[in-house]
Amino acid sequence: MAELTYRSAVAHGIAQEMRRDPSLVMLGQDVGPAGGVFKTTLGLWDEFGRDRVRDTPISEQAILGAAMGAAMTGVPVVAEIMFSDFLPVCFDMLSNEIAKTRYMSNGQLAVPLVVRCANGSGVRFGAQHSQSLENWCMMVPGLKVVAPSTPVDMVGLMAAAIRDPDPVVLFEHKSLMAIKGDVPDGEVLDTLGTARTVRPGTDVTIAALALMVPRALEAAEILAQEGISAEVIDVRSLVPLDMASILESVRRTSRLVTVEENPRLCGWGAEVASIVAHEGFWDLDGPVLRITTPHVPLPAADVLEDEAVPSVDRIVDTIRTSWG
Image 1 (cartoon, rainbow, N blue to C red):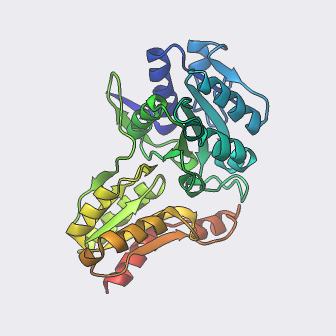
Image 2: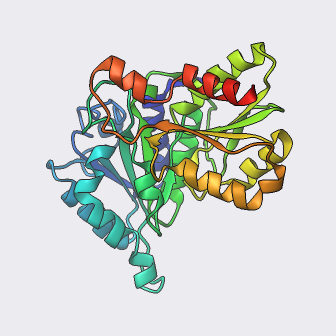
């Protein structure tokens, strides 16, 4: 067992798979000797060399174009887009080419590609470097989408994403980079499309993703002191989406709150709420509540960013108010 930071877990997961599969390559801006802007690839260039860890020009379209071409020939690729905010620059390549190749080739061509990107708020980078774009990728048929919240999940889901024969977008939250957690020795392999109950409860289900998971856990601790038992589910994977675990939890608690960093309009929580309203309506004692960032560009000023992004206090207040 080793204690790793979230950022070092990224490199750990990639290294595990590069040792396992000598054909696996990685490419992106400054992923080589520099170790990436968030130091998430530190040490990989030293161990695997420049032929397998390749620095690229500042061109997101070129990165994904090269990655797609290699993947189509059977070479598995991990491609880094430095910030998720830059996915729109190459979204045609991601959504119209990478996501649709297997379907349009009638299964003759696969694209074993993981697109990694730093995502989310908390580092005061402003409206163009702080967005949460999981829901953008969630709506594209042909893409799988994961967002780990802990070091061990990062390693396991990274491995699962790399071994998947189809394209996966993996979001790494910038505000989680320094958190630490235990990672088992030896191979760590998780399963895409599985949520995890990280705190059991009986009164209300809180479904959260990435940075919102530790905030939901902190809120649950506060609510417990007030006699409200909150079950916290780490969604982890948006595509495939483990609705079975969420519906099972709602059957026990009869209430659901989703907590997400996406802007409110068309966030992933809306899809979860829709499914629960359709498939779990008679299990509910009240309406599904959504806690989100408002539909605004994310400010750079700390006080404004903190006001916009769901906080522990907002989670507690929302549940407390609905309880009364």
